[in-house]
Length: 125
Image (cartoon, rainbow, N blue to C red; front, top):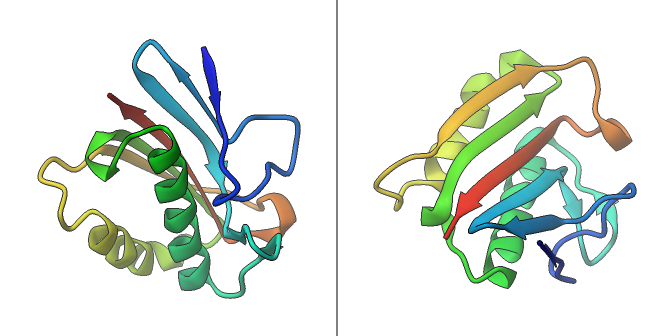
């Protein structure tokens, strides 16, 4: 097992790793829309989702992987009415990936730091 960490993604807000690689799998901890340069949550739903995917890209890069390696996405969202907007951003993020990852989206009451969305990723080499 190997911890993956990069300064290009935010420092975890709790006692966990940005990501862990084990047996060819990369497990990226739930990411919220924190800008790693400021350490602050970005404002706005769309902006948070975009920032999350930037953070995911940074972690993937540190692990030597790409979007094409993502096999499972779990999304937690505080306002399920934003599902369509989420899908538009998500579709754009994965537009160049031929096989889209499996996914689940779960509506939740609240998230850390009052984030509107949190995304967890599993990737494979």
